[in-house]
Image (cartoon, rainbow, N blue to C red; front, side, top):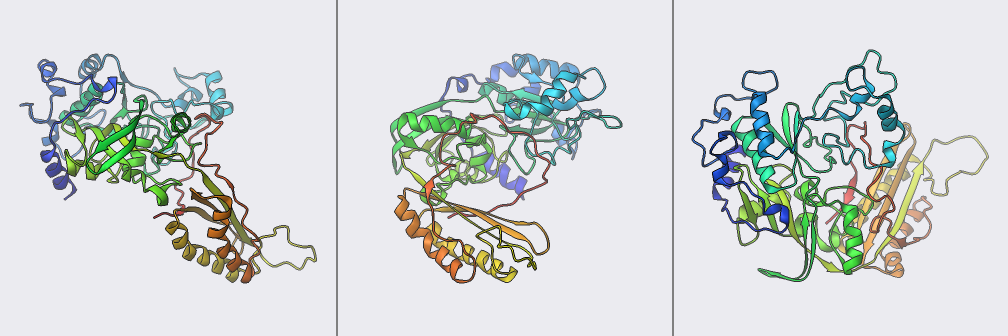
Length: 463
């Protein structure tokens, strides 16, 4: 059914192209495919696609995997942008790539740099890849393999290079994946035996004080798909405006998978989700065409891309999104916990200790019920419940309240605190401060490293 819906959508796409940035002006033409049919557009090739000959994708070592000569020809068409990288930690293992100094850097210093963000293979959640090549000082008995990492990576700096990768993968039945910054918890930035389109370098920004499209008239910005959240905050300061984006400390690629997946932020209850912000999207679709999608052109594709999931309907290379007047965001914490009863006469070390386990869970229930009010006044709440033992739990939460003064934050949250105090959870008074999430970060995009946690779920109160 999904394939049928996708094919129907693709058939309705009109090839209307809008160039927002210089990298979008470099596009694949029909004349260039004459001598290399593997890069032909879907509706122009007369070559029978390998996709029609096998129900499974081609895989390295199988007879239908493209020959080295074909990959070399593709690389020539890409002007040398085709990479065949080894996993970063391969330098820690015996073999031709072993490099003790480089391995030491990964273990001791990479966490203070942008090494993993700027690596064409690395992803920040390891489990989808299989963790088949981890950094270690003691590799005895262990091996380093490609695992779920792609075989080839296209370091895309132009639309043409994306079109070439899409067409080649489709015509040769090779698995295609898209990676921006590698934050996808669900593993869509990895894929064994695949070719990856790396959109990390598609950076661009333009502020427009006035932009009109359909019913919208107001501030807007043009943004490249590779721009990261932390890079937006200095630009918001520069142009005295705001855009809906992840926290200022994060390296999430805003207008790739984040927006396609819905896009939550501290402004979600105030201005809407990230997917609500798009006014126009420039996209390479599965047939290799470069098109524009908006409320007026390719409306179905525009609808699908705004929350339909990353890597599903096309590769977004740039977007026009809404911008808003500058605003402040107030923040307040709410934390409490419960621990087993003891016979000690010493006072509890925590001033927010629930009197018993039943009271703790009653407090959690009151918090979530109160979330309806928080979202109704434009706020969000990011909360976590952690278990230390069978009878020890902690609840941590941060309220983010856009456009509110300190007094307004107190008025919005204190009724919940009073309720918790009354049932035996002494959380005290609300103490608002300026948001730490809605602010520029001194990290400057540094410090992200791959994690070994399988999956983390956090319950967020969003409108």
